[in-house]
Every structure is written in structure tokens, then in C-alpha cells.
Length: 335
Image (cartoon, rainbow, N blue to C red):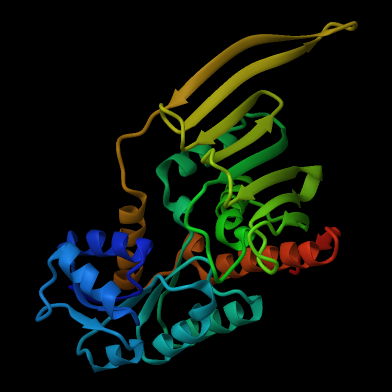
């Protein structure tokens, strides 16, 4: 039995409450949020027994809970560094919502601290636990797309506008994590262009360009203002294109095949085919939580949830932020 506390009862924290309470190997010991009304609403919604699950306003109070093993953080990104440092120093395994922090040096420090304490620092880059993204990686590695040409993604909605980070840090990190995973590469330089339509200090719409080795380029559009909700990533190869579209009415993953033939004076397309990649139903957050618990039990870190991967992503986001602040200049990503 692993005893866990949750810090933050917003939208994501609520998902974790559902998942953990259904897990027979977990005991939810505490829920922490500085907003008393949020805790009261949470207690009523989930009919929580306050004798079994403590409802706390001060996160430092979790140190009074006996036999606590791990803490899940779903608080704003700007709070992560100080919270995680305190929790690791207190001897708890930590699962943190993305991004790990908003500063790569802080990410490195926390990763090293977790190692020195022999504790799990597990970062929830949710899509990397999605079985369909793993299937997509297999398709690419098998050469079904041929030589990769370029990629593009769009992630937009009209909801959940953040106050702590801009739209790049909030939304683009998902597509960047998937691209790095699928390509098994990291961009070497980036460029960002954005607009500040709601506030003067936080970009709410952005267009990004990521330059990978071998002249592979990915573009990403992110927006908090678009009424047309989009969650789509496409990788184009010489033989096929692989499309991951969460808003599709069918399976999100589709392989579109077709060969371009050069007829000297014109081009034609042959052997068109569309293959829908199906998978049995799954809950990605549940799979991710199971992986976290397994890491604790086996005391084993995995690459997709590691501090190193999270740090690499933060370095890319830092470079994009630098580009945004310097008239969309192309910026090299730190090693």
C-alpha cells in the first residue's frame, strides 16, 4: 500500500482523486489546497471521509502525516520548484504535472536532489504514456513512413487560460514531447512568433518552428482563443503520413499511404490507402499513475518520466521564450 497526498484540487487534481481512489494499492491520505472553498467543494463532490483523508490548506502540514510515501503536485508551474525541493528533502517520492519547473537550472538541481535522496521524481508528460503514441513510434521505427520530411501540429481551444505561464509553456510542451519521442531527437534551434491579445505580458497565441537534425522541421500552432478545438499532430514521410488527431470521430491514429510518381512532365499519386490504427479502450492518466507506482515499488527510473527528459523540454521552452522576446529570432537550444 502506497500512501499519497495531492497538492492542488483544480481540474487535473480532480482527475487524480478519481484515479487514486479506485486503485486498491493506494491510500489517499490528504488533499491540500489554500482555497477552503475548493476543498469544501471537493469533499462534497467526492463524498470524502475527513477521518480517512485529511483536507489541508497548508502544504507544509503534510509532514504531520505518518507513513506518507509520495505526493502528487497539480499546482501552477511557478510553484513547482519550491514545493518539489521541500518534498524531496522531506523524503517523499514526487509526481509533478508538466512542466517540471520554468527554469532549466532548477530542473537540473531537483533531478540531482532526487537522485541523491534515492527518490522518484516523476514528471507527467501525459502523451508519452498513451499506447497509440507508442504504436506511432513503432510505425516510424519500422520505416513505414520512409524518409521523414516534416511535421506540423495544432493545439487550440477556448478554455483553461492560464495565469502563471504563456500558451507555449501550457500547450506546446505536449506536442514537443511527442515529437521528440517519435523522432528520437531533440530540436537544435527554434523560432517563435506570438500575439498578446488578452494581456500585454502573456502570449495567448503562438506559431512555433522547431529545427531538428537532418533538416527536419516541425511547426506548431497553439492558441487559447480559438473556438475550433484542435488536438492534431501529423508527421509526413516520403511513403506515408501519420496523423494523431484526438478530435477525430474514429481512432485518433491514422496512417495515410500513397506514392508520388514522377512522370517527367507531371506528378501523380499511386497506391492510396488509409489505415485506421485501433486500440482497446484505455485511460492514459491511469496508465501513467500505474507507472509511477511501479517506479516507486521497483525503485527504478524510466526515461519518459525522468527529470532529464523534463529538463530537455524546459530548455526548448526557454529557447522559444527567448525567441518570442527577441523579435522571433532563431535561437539555439542549450545542450
